Image (cartoon, rainbow, N blue to C red; front, side, top):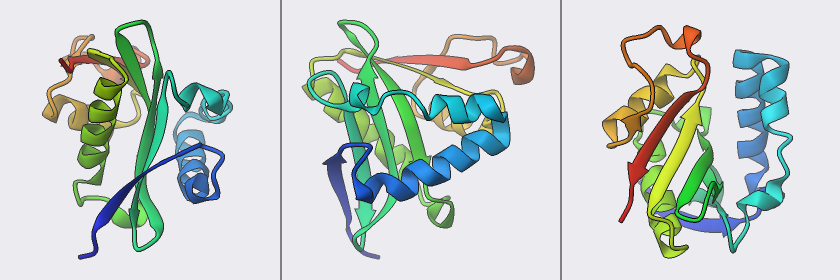
Length: 155
């Protein structure tokens, strides 16, 4: 197995293109036009001093990534957490979360907030398994809730 390298980039960097393209397809196939809309958010919100866009690189190729942006003075909001479809089930999303949490901590954030869509059960399970507190009733059908919000302290 090759070593994973964490790379801080802009969302517009060519190395991020596979992530952006596949994530746009994923969101659009699950949520239609609203999914495409999410990917139209101005990417500069993921740049220092308020946010960061990270890639996990393996053999010079982006295999996973994610970003955070300022939610409020103490809170970073995670966005764009993704694993390339050919590299899933390897724990890469969990590694991305750890890297993003550590990076957010260096920016001075003490809390993480994030939402995932009701049609992304794998994301919901990841956040529950990594210590995120659901801000919704986990016993309710996710499709009746809308975005599923989570938070986590990262002191």
